[in-house]
Every structure is written in structure tokens, then in C-alpha cells.
Image (cartoon, rainbow, N blue to C red; front, side, top):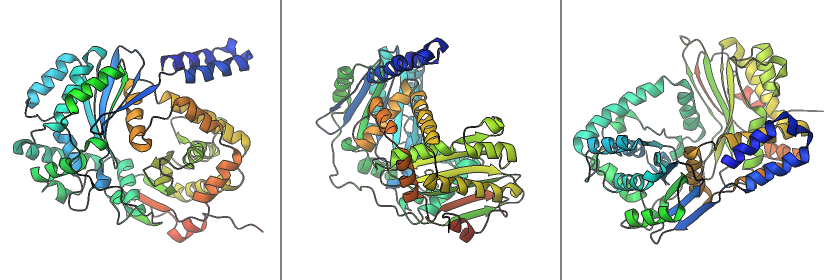
Length: 467
């Protein structure tokens, strides 16, 4: 990453802009020179993947193929509950001992749960990687799951659910998943319903660990000052006791997409929060890169940016000049076999209709009349964002872990760059036509949303009738 960053700084110097061929070669060379991601599979199936950049710090973590998608209506919320219990003590150390050990190292321990993955990771000095790996191994194999701690975390999670309810973007996206994937595991929230949190027991937590924390579903990822062989040796030492006890562990249940809507009208709120999306592509689908380019074409904007007529995105220009909304953000959310591609925006009640009209107009332009210049701009911006998002050991470690679970390999940056470069105007039109044109969208709205057109009108704007 240091080499990529230095190459980008070189590209930014005015004096170098008179030699486009030299800078292009330098950029390509920098991408190729990024340290390779080395992968080793242990005898029990755990995959160890790392990128050694020689940094004085390192991030190591466990990426587990287990999230709310693998739950049912009765135990929905258990994966997130387990994440909360991870740092509450093990059979070897109390919570206090664990916290003091991490603090004395100057390290940071963290965890999160998504719909398809559970993650535990530690950021530390390169010299402390061995301790960090031992701690991670301890918390997923020997977590005490003491009853008093379970009761305490039950209250913490219930309060967290109240906090999430005040984050309207998260509320809207939960509603969007609930309507788009209704009746399927992807329609469930990550935190689970209140009734489940109140009754999840130690037995439920132990059963989830036994079923899903299988070595074949775990990736130990490392980035920064991490020697791969050293990491492999540490994994062999601390994770060799894990066995694949369940050979027929539940796989991914296909989650059908349903074009539908959910509206939570509350006229006491000042602004409406709205998301509209079509079914997108899964991680491994070849259509994913063109959809990412199309997503970048729509872009994001909020009132603090300004820009006016100088915004490259038409929707940003329209939003800025005509006051269509307070902010908008396009998104391309991917899962193993499906996804959501759409836009989230915040607007005043009287702005909703005009904003939605312009959004769908831009979507139809992607299918029919997007230009080569627009696609080239989006491809350059996508590549820039890709590099900026890998700035630091933690984002790189996360990228490795996620890609190992999604693709069973880490796609090199130069390969991603080549894939983006290969996207043509016709690719974008064809893929957008496939996913957008004449498709039933999913819509979620919270707030004063009376001005949101009825669903049949929204659906009718997903195609153009032309003589």
C-alpha cells in the first residue's frame, strides 16, 4: 500500500502531468508491486491469508462465515449476541484480565456482525501479533458465556436497539431488506427482534457456535507487519484443536427478491428518509463490476458539498441547483447470491416526488443513453475509491477476510483494475437494462412520506415508452 500511495502522490504532481505515458506505466507498476496475499489452508480447513507490507503495526482477525442470514425466526439475533459475549471473559481469563492485557499492549480489540459474516479482529504492534492471535483463539474457543454476563449483555443489546432506532438510515435499510427479502433470512435484522433478545439462552449461544463456528468456515486474516509463515505457525498452534464436527452444516438458503414497499409515515418528523432498490448481483457474479460502475455514475451528494453546476453527476447537479433533496447516496449491497442496487435519499415532503422522478430518469438513462465520457469518469472514480478504501492495515485485513469468504481467494488490485478498465459503455447499458429496466423495485420510506407516489406509479417509471 505504501508503494501505491507514493505512486498516487507522484501522479498528483503538476510537473508529471506532461508525461501521461510515464505516469500510466508508474501507476500500473505500483499496482503490480503491491505485496501479494499469501494463503495457506490448515489440516482442519482454516484458511490463513495475509499481506506483509512491513508496517510497524498489524491487524489480525477472524472472519467467520456466519451471520444473521444463517438464523431462523426463533434464534434471530444470536450471532450478534455472541459478538457481544466475545470479550466478556474466557475459561483462561476474566473480562478484567483480558481488558488489562489488551490495554497494556496498546492494542485495540473489536468485532462486528453482518448478515453473512461475524468478525473479531485486533490491531496491534507488529511485535505483538502472537499475543493478538492467542487472544482471538481464546475468545472463540473458550468463551465462558457466564449467566450474569449474558443477562448484562441482554440489557446492553436492548439499549443498542433503541439507539439504532434513532439512526434513520439503518432503520430504512432494515425495512428495505424486510420488504425486498420478505419471508427469507435476509429479511431479518442483524440485532433480531426484542422478544428473541429477551429469551436467548446460554444453550442457544453454544448451539450456534457448535453449528457455525466450524474451521472450514473460518479465515484468519492478517495485514501490515505480518510474516505469513509466522501467522500459519500461530494458527496451527492455537486453532489445531478445532474440528469440523458437523459435515452438513446449514448452507446458504436462496433468498427470493420481492418488488414491494413499506411505508412508516410519521408527519412529526421534519424529513423523509427513502430507499428504493432493485435486485442486484451476488459477489461472484460477472455483472457485479459493471453494476459498481453504474453505482458510481449515480454517486452521492449532500448539501454541505455545494458544487452546483460543476458537479460531474447529473443527479448531484440537479439536487444542488433545484433543491431536490438534502442528501442522496447510491449503494450496491452484495451478498453471496443476490444483492440490492439502489439509492437512499433524505428530502423534505414536497421534494420527494421530484427527487424520485429524477432518480428514475437517471436509471433509465443508464439503460439507454449513458455516454462513454460518463462511464470513463465513473471508472476512474471507482478505481480511486478502491485504493483509498485500502489505506491502512485494518481495511486491508478486512478486504482479505471478506474476499476469502466470498471468492475463496483475494483478488489482486491489478486484476480488479483490469476488470474495471474492461467495462465498456455497452456493458453498462446491457447490465443496467438487465437489472433495472422494467423491474419491480423494493421501496422503504420513513417519515413524512405522503408525497411519495403510489407503488404502481413508481413501478411504471421503471421503463420508457417511446414511439
